[in-house]
Length: 178
Image (cartoon, rainbow, N blue to C red; front, side):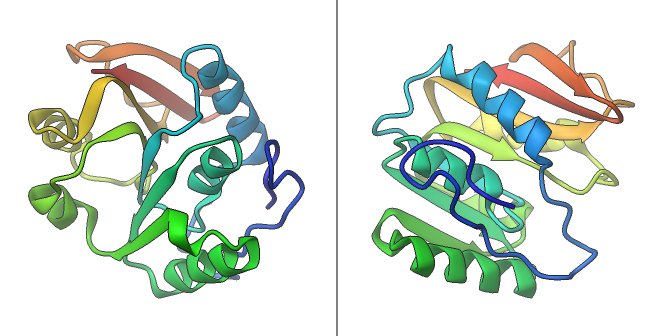
């Protein structure tokens, strides 16, 4: 896994051999960022990476100009890898790593973010509740985007914040706008 573009282009993102963490594929990540690049300016934005895993999406946003990224995960291997990548890139001042269950984090979060990445396990029991929690508070800034990576068996077109989705084989990324 590596960063695809920006000031850290080509730099490696630390990972582990853990099978319980499913990183975003390079093909999906490239397409997502190409799609986002025509919709937002990354310079100076704040990013929240929920179910961050090894932080591939958050570190990519940071490389492309985001001012800050907050990573939320509770998997020990993920947290170690996030810290190691931050040190190797020298970006410790621009990130925060939150060791928390995502649902618990959403219940207490007070900051506002311009871009949210959300990549829960495909077996996540309640995507709709997750979306409600995100849009129910002030977590997402005015004109902010939420991207959720999930299985193609789920469809969120009925959500009032749904914009569009892109499919990549069995993976779907749904885009939502505040």
